[in-house]
Figure 1 (cartoon, rainbow over the protein chains, first blue to last red):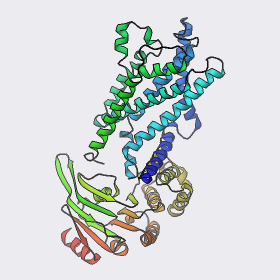
Figure 2 (figure 1 turned 135 degrees about the horizontal axis):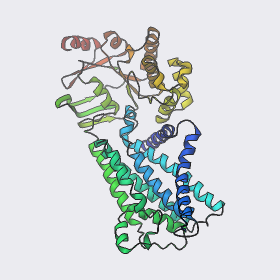
Figure 3 (figure 1 turned 135 degrees about the vertical axis):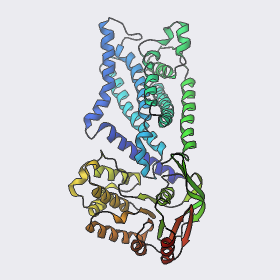
Figure 4 (figure 1 turned 90 degrees about the vertical axis):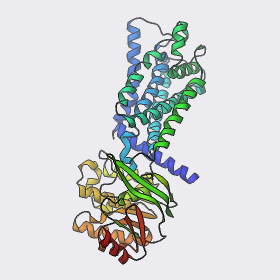
Length: 256
Length: 216
């Protein structure tokens, strides 16, 4: 049994390397771009807020506030968008019986998570080193928030990947679902300061909870009224069970 | 050990129901090279994919307690944008064998030279077949599943692949789909005929060939 586990880890590792080659190309510039891109989007946000003369919604650093929101949201979005095609783009891999379709899903997951670990470390580390941010209050809580975001992305992605197999139109649906998240997840405002009617709607969004989680970990007195760690985890668990379960149940009927 | 336990496999192709296997139970004889014959479209390639595990049966189970290759075919499961070397390394990692070792064996066999550093998309079909065959044999399996591959390539490659296959059957087992009596006689000791959803076993190649001529 442990032999099977070792074999599967080996397969996922090989696939992760392969995915990295497919995503970033052979040059290091490809990987660099993946790291720079989210940093650019934060810089644009900071610049816009600076030009219109707005203060940081929380703390003194605009960059830090946006980073906690944008990076967490980007991790989720990237997982959702990348896992979407994990099954449909990897049919040729099924030539090798050592590979199960879900291995491609996990490999893509690993690659995104490892990339974002680097991005998070570079960005938060950079802000602290440059004196633009304090040390985080509870780094372990930020790790928890990161893991919860990854888990949520995996759950959502596993369902997207199955639906993508039903119809290629699902790629557009995923985009439509994903777009309003930027406004609904508290990226550039503090959810607790919204009117109660608005909060009553916003709190259904699991991504908002993981972003609040990240900020609770960074700031000493963030004190979110909305944050509930069990909600995003429960959503993630249900979606993952749905995604992996439906894959397993339909395996026999799918033609190779 | 490879065994089929009440295995059924059927397809629905554009509204047409196609039964490849109908409640078949069969244990592949140990230590014997097996020829698999049957009509065109009888489902020989599907059966190889079922044994390999790249496809699942509609009903029943397939037991597999050994290292079984993928169904070795003409093209291989290569990614066109990746180079030959990258594809080789990937498969070596997949099966937990040292990449350098595998690379060396494939280089020696396939004779692709500098082309190995080019994307597979630039290869001719003959080059792809050489790479696919070399790569399959460079990975160590207990059983190799071979789908008509000996008919590939130029004369020189045919001779070379026959020789390599001859060496392989000494230490491992092969299950081979072929329509060629001479190939079957050269490499296999026993045979299976796939006919109308059932498997028929022959412990003599000559009787397999006799029935193959009569029914297929």
